[in-house]
Length: 88
Image (tube, rainbow, N blue to C red):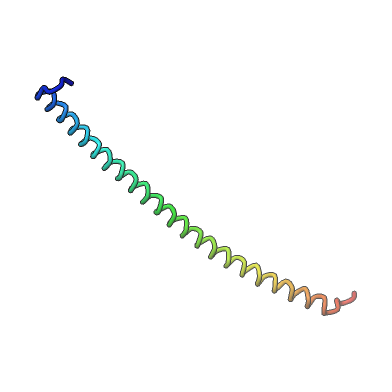
C-alpha cells in the first residue's frame, strides 16, 4: 500500500469492509450449523430417553411375569412334594 494515496486507502478500506462482511456471513453460517447440531443432539437424547423408558417398562413387565411363573412353579412343587404319590 502506498503511503497517503487516497485511491489506495479507499481500495484498502473497501477490501477490509468486504472481508468483515464475509466474516459476518461465515459466523452466521457457523452459528446456524451449531444450532442445527445442538437440536439434532437433543432430539437424539430425547429419542434415546424414550426408548430407555420403553425398555425399562418392558423389563419390569417381563420380570413380573417371570416372578408369577416362579411362584406358580413353587406352589406346584410344594403340592407335589406334600402329596404322597400313588403306588402301583
